[in-house]
Image 1 (cartoon, rainbow, N blue to C red):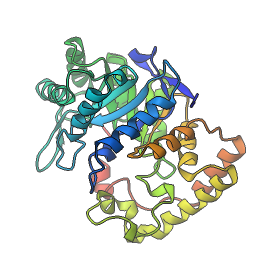
Image 2: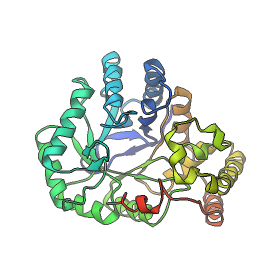
Image 3: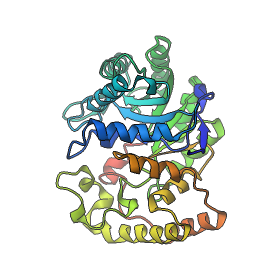
Image 4: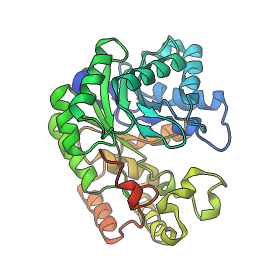
Length: 342
């Protein structure tokens, strides 16, 4: 049994979840369909590994499909149809609030947020209600106070139970929390994605007792060491477009992977578990959010949450990362990445 647990923040402070969450993007936005049974087993493995009374934190979105449709939610509907008893064993966070089309853009108007959560719930079905709703990006056309008031209106209508934010700055998080308690802030955090923005959000979340959903703690799979060369990335895989995966940055970033592998080897854990444990060590409200499409990988990730790194081991990782800075921007280049933080 995996015993490391954490309480959520804000209005969900009575809810216990596993220290490591499960991101569901890879179950449906993939080059090759993995099938329902494999997907279901990947989800069930995490739920079943946790002690009674502890929920598995699942993370989905209105647009987690190859065509930015509701395929991920429809898969979850089939999961809960088959295993209805798992509805109460899981805490489900769903991102929405995006106007999809040729150029997806955030739209946090009350009208679009209502459209989004209604669309999400229809796709998800009647068995499982959305626990936590997050606008996927901060809509800069509205003050955060207006966005929060829109979300509170929908919460009071019973559309969902708790409010979260995604890709928010520390200032936005603080201002939003002053309007209504935020349960979780979802941001990218990993050994190759930990800069001033992340540090500020984590510090603010720690102060306000807000959970931090740290997505991509394994660097989109790069930091696991399973990807050895550019040829290991399938044709059409979205990761090939990421700046850190580009040929000019590959050699530098592979050296980071090899260094982390050496540290993990001395600890007797996998590199993935080292990354997850390192992210978890960054604060008491941290919840690493890796993805998994296989039951074995789900369990490997969960065990990373129960790994305790000593002060000496943490210092070794930090010193190595300081001496080997990552090459490349978060996504597709600085001119795009600068717009991610709201």
